[in-house]
Every structure is written in C-alpha cells, then in structure tokens.
Amino acid sequence: MLNSALSSCQAFVFDKLLPHWANYGLDATQGYSYESMHHDWTRNQTGRLRLLTQCRQLYTYSHACLLTNNDEWQAKLTPLFDFITHHYFVDNRWIFSLDDNLSIQDTQSDAYALAFILLSFSYYYQFSQDERALPYMEKTHHFLLANMTAQTGGFYESFPVDEKQTRRQNPHMHLLEGYIAAFNATGANDYKDTIRSLLDLALEHFYHKKSQTLREFFTTDWQPDPNTGHQVEPGHHFEWVWLLYQANAILPNSDYTDLAQQLWLTAARYGMASNGGIYNQIDGDHYQAIDKEKRIWPITEYLKAITVIPIGKEEKIDRLTKALDFMQCHYFLENGRWNEYLDEHNQAKDYPLPGTSSYHIFLGLTEVITWAQLNTGFNGFR
Image 1 (cartoon, rainbow, N blue to C red):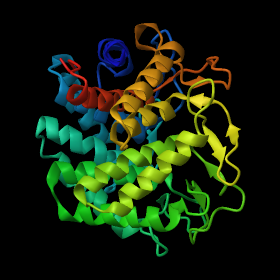
Image 2 (cartoon, rainbow, N blue to C red):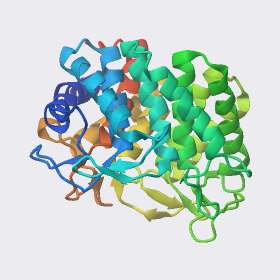
Image 3 (cartoon, helix red, strand yellow):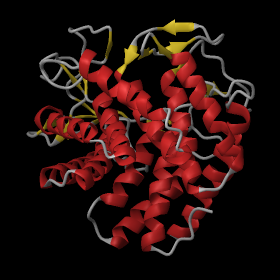
Image 4 (spheres, helix red, strand yellow):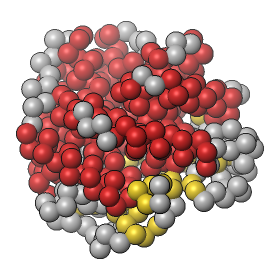
C-alpha cells in the first residue's frame, strides 16, 4: 500500500507540480519565479517578489535535477541564479524584496531568507558546479557573523538590527538547514562551527524542558515572550526532528537525537488531529490545539520526521501510508495544484498557490522516496 500511495504522490510532484510551475510560474524572459499563482495557473500579483521565494524555487529545481535527468528544469537553473544575484545582492548584502516591476522594494536583510541563500546555492552548486555560488555563500556567512550576531546568542531577525525585536526560533531552524547543506556541499569547517552553535541554542533556549516542547517566540534575552511564548507549532517539532538527525550525521551527539525523539513524542501525541492532518498550533503549557487549521507544510515535515525517527518499520510504513493518503485526499488537486489550507474539518480554504510551498511538498516526498527505495523496494526517481 505504501508503494502505491507513494507512486501516485511522486507522479503528482514530478509529473505535474514541478512541470507546471516551470512552465507557468517562472518568467520565460528573465527566469525569476512569480510570488504566487492562481489555481488556473495564471500569475497572482501580490505586489512583491521576495528573495525567499526565488531561493526556494532554485533549491527545489536544483535538488530535482540532482535526482532526475530533466533538461527543461536544468535550463531554468542558471537564469534563476543570475536573477537572484543581479537583483537582490545590493551594496554587498541581500535585500528582502522587489516589487512587481522588479524595482527594489524592501532593503532589509532577512535572516530567514539568508538561510535559503545557503540552502539553494549549495544545491545549485552541487548540480551545476557553478563556482560563482561559493563566494556568495561565504559572503552570506560572514555578513551574518559580522552584522546580525546577537550578544545573547543566535542571530537577529533582520538588518539593520532592531535590538528590541521579538526573537524567533524559526529563522535559526532554517539557518541550521542552510548551514548543513553548505557544509555537505563544501566541507568548510566554518559552516560546521555555526551548525554547532545553532544546536547549542536549541538545547539551551528553544527547548522548554518542563513541557517538553519547542517554543517559538522569545524576548531579547531568550525568555518566552509574555504574549506568544506559549505557542507551539507541531510542524516545527517534526522539522527539527529531521534536522537534528541530519546534524547528528555531521556532529554525532546523543543530545541531538535525544532532543529529536522527545520533540517527536510531543508532536505525535498532541499535534495530530483525530480526523487526520497536523494542527497549525497548540498551547505548549496545556497541549490543547489553539489553531486547528492545517496548512500543507506541517504534514510534509511529518513525513520527513517519520523517515529518521527510530520506530519500527511497520509503524513507519503505516504512518507514511496514512499521511500520503491524507495528502492525496485533501491537499493534492488536478494539474499539479494543491490546497494550501484546510479548516479543522478538513475542508479546503480558498487560497492561491504560494511560490514557497513546493519546497516543502517536494522535500517531504523526496525523503520518503529515498527511504522507501532502501527499505521497501520502491522504484523511485526516474
């Protein structure tokens, strides 16, 4: 049953979603990605084009090209890379967004977006061997250290720095992802050192030992924010599970895998709805759902977590099969489209297709395919 569900999901992503975004969501003349698409595959002009969106698309197609021999996708990579470097690297740093006319809109450097420079340029380099990517990665790393490092640990959200801003775990999680990719692509010890510091931050500040939850929002000195510090996202629990095992392959430490296993237990116990899917948010103090809607990305992170967590093979197969069936039933639509949001009753909400979501869908499914190739005889990438 798993292989059948996985085959259908693979066809959706590789034969429909990625080809349709390549055909309709990437500008044919200049190579950049649109921010959002309507469900008829026409452009949804949102008034901005974020660096984040460009990087997620570059990552997705670069990784897809490492797995497949798709000439059409390969032809999209260098134009997209060139657009990113020509339009978003201004005065020796990355800016946040352009407007729909490709003029500079927001000149902040955003830590979350910088994480995806590291991720996408790492995969672009691995596929293309375009060495222009490497100095941009190094400049990004040094800019973070020199301009966005906080005295209390971690990185500020944005530059220019607002020292009173709410601190978040989420940019740090994606920076960990980006630095893992950068180290795997280059072997540079500087990247490994930052991986270690981000993991220390998670163990010391993000993880709330009493409730065994990962908190999201903090004061400047890493105390839970008085208004939002109780909020917990099960999808981020699952995302950290996968990342902690990726990091453990680079820096073996039982503290990392112990944390991953505890985050799994909490999210699997309290973050999963009885009618299927993953809640957007729960209360970390009382474990009750406070946002019962279900965006698509948390279930893709659940897929990734299943592939690495040390549970029995039969349980893995059962969980993967049920999750993939749920996605096919409630999220995946014809012609490579998807439902971005479900309500608590699993009814789809009317919402366009964000250019950032295919990253989650692609990576979640890719990890399952990779696991199934090794464990169930699944005939995967073609």
